[in-house]
Length: 328
Ligand code: NAX
Image (cartoon, rainbow, N blue to C red; front, side, top):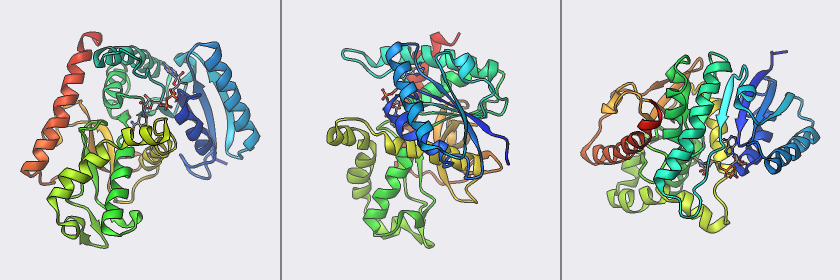
């Protein structure tokens, strides 16, 4: 049997955690032959720790054959010890009267501490996925706080936006989501993200030609994908949880196990591709193989796309400037 992999999850007693942990323990994250040990972090608060114990009781009651162990933590220095994968889901939500700036700073604080802890105790190959918002900037802060780990190990979740775009395109073209290739989402996980089906194909046919409607792209598709999170809150009375957990599973699964040449979207530190400044955590089309991702190169960026990419980049640069003083 394989040696168990250690998967650390923060915000483990939250809504996303409740959808995520059972799927990890079921083998959906790292494969049906890969035992896992869950190292679960919650805030140092009696109610949160008690809720976490409750989730762990339910995990026990599933008797998952692949769940080789689990531990509860309130300190990232123990939660991240030897972690092979770290899913940073817990974050500070925006409270009443809280400005965007306060939100950025509260989260910068959390992700500085967690980045340092990963740097100190995690596996040197740890794969980090930041889900907690603002995800791209939180991933940037964690990466900058972990100078002894490779920067490429830090990623942010754009996969929910990617999956949302896939299903909108499938509905519009009357095709199956699984048949759509070469779709991607550029930029920040925020309403400014740019979902791009210009290169997408179904059975070798161009999706752009099938749709052939730039107004639908601009006035229906992009706003629908961009505001989907708000639409879910409006309908459900709570933010996306199962779909967010599913996207986190997809992201790490594909990163570890490969996409066999197919594109997906990951928020990764830019290497300067497409004029995105180095180090900014940006949604790019990627392929993955042997546990490494590669940004798809050589795509043509037309005027409309450049405008959209610049807009989402400007937002990320503004967020980066807003936390720069905390990273000294
Ligand atoms: P919940 O509020 O249900 O759960 C968050 C949990 O994190 C809570 O139990 C809280 O105690 C814990 N927590 C807070 N600070 C922590 C810390 N420093 N260390 C450990 N645990 C901590 O939120 P949930 O709905 O699960 O969402 C979690 C995060 O995902 C939010 O920031 C949310 O905005 C973000 N999302 C990101 C998405 C993406 O596509 N990147 C989509 C879904 C989601 O909105």
